[in-house]
Length: 386
Image 1 (cartoon, one colour):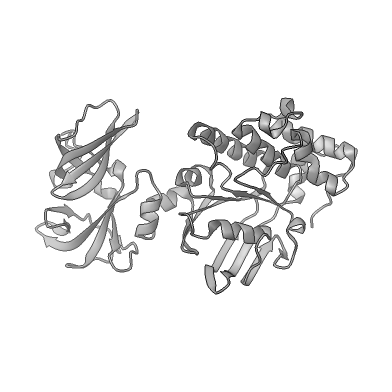
Image 2 (cartoon, one colour; image 1 turned 180 degrees about the horizontal axis):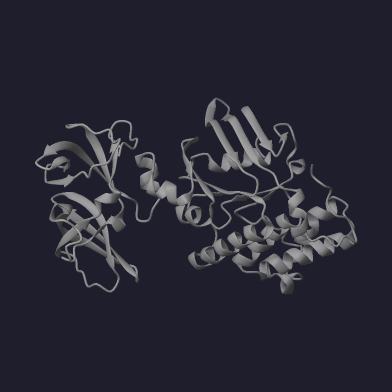
């Protein structure tokens, strides 16, 4: 059972109260239609108490719609939305005990930071002493203590986003909902705010559902990632599991920077066993793997991460059959590493090398393939088969 929020004069901090306001989130067969157009197709998803789950996918995949269905800003067309032990399909947004942080901050421009953070509590007729305590505690948590009297126009983008987060924190909700909160920030601020949001989760230990199109945000923030496409869920799992074991070519190409190399191929028999024939110009051996569903002449897609395609150093660690010659087309220096865009007899691949290594366009290199991390997908279904 949840205990009521502490009133005026309570010595309990926001963090102390978290034990009583935790909640899981469950979506059971959730469908959303706008007119005759169905944009969310029967989603099932269970988010555990205190879990940080990130919904990620390209624009138009339905991730923000799912978040709005949880918040109550959109009504489900079919299915059930549960927060904790309560089905909230017909519960008003203000009564769902979920606080939402928006992409555009949604701050009142005529109010200072303190008033923006406290406005919702005043509408609930909370005692002033309790409002002061909550606002000051949240401000200290987010390093906003010296900015409480400033107006939004006097703040940086990162500070405005922290104010929006503080306004959510003071409500002491069961669930935080973040709708692409970092999209309007520059690259440096996005990195800083990712750290702030992760630190916030460690401090307040509340269930968080976070929407982004940025797979770097998803990988760095999430306990689990939900990869979406076209209103459906493609894969759910821990970030490293989704990265290492994508279920299909869409997930393989979406998660990872640069994206995984995905090349049409055909399985062939070779002197040493099964091989992948790439555009009839080169063959890549397929290491034995128990349970793999492979057959000769099957059309497939070869997948190999860019970090698994590197310059062969001749140290004998990679057998010659796991190497190929490639011509460098484009060099992308990134500091600590360099992306190499390669042409292998008309097959285009992306590999990596150390940032300090001199490589120039037009150079022919011997490249090493780490086939221990080879992926093979069925060409028709796009599903992983190896």
